[in-house]
Length: 320
Image (cartoon, rainbow, N blue to C red; front, top):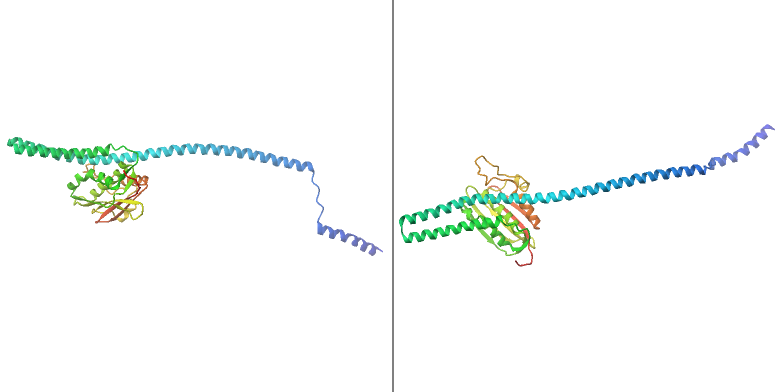
């Protein structure tokens, strides 16, 4: 009897156990009030996070505004420094020309005084006429030298204008052409193009003048040949202004650094008069001025054979 009852109980429990194993226990129902409280807490946390995020955004915006103002000030300062650097190099170039001019004027005055004194001592009308003519020629030579320097020194023009490339090269070369023979430098002009460019003339003139002075110094003391070249570039729409010397050249290890500020291969010596020593600013300033004009400057050099500096500028279809 008991065995039968046990079997019946087992049969009754098996379906319930099977159901629980298949479905699992029934989930307990949550209290709606707990759910609401949980949602409210989550909402409060979200609001606090949003407030914190708003404050962070406001702070970030304030920082951005401050950084923009500082960036504007830095850019203005950079522009002023660039202009000051250009003017500093310009003054250094004027100083070199003025130093040379002092020697030139000394020679001019000695010729004038010597001829005049000789004519007076001889009391000869023909000698007096020749002495006066020589004095006039020397005086005109001195006046031309001064005019060139004054034109360059007073060239404060900052507006671009159209000018022929060969005319611009001539303006720069003429500033020092009178001094080149004293350094045993032969000047050759090879102008194959009359293309027009739009530049601030005094700035590109400053570039070319710096390259000419560098070339002259590279050929000291034995002298050499300086060739000023103006021709169409291999790149369509551009003209090249080249200055080629037969000087000492630039060592290969220096070629990549010559446009770095303050890099110079001409240190000042104790017996240096101050007119020839290198500041290391000429070529960096030259590169910046050429780039501002929409061009580029390149150099090719072979040690003990010479260097060629090429200024590449865009041609325009306008006439001066």
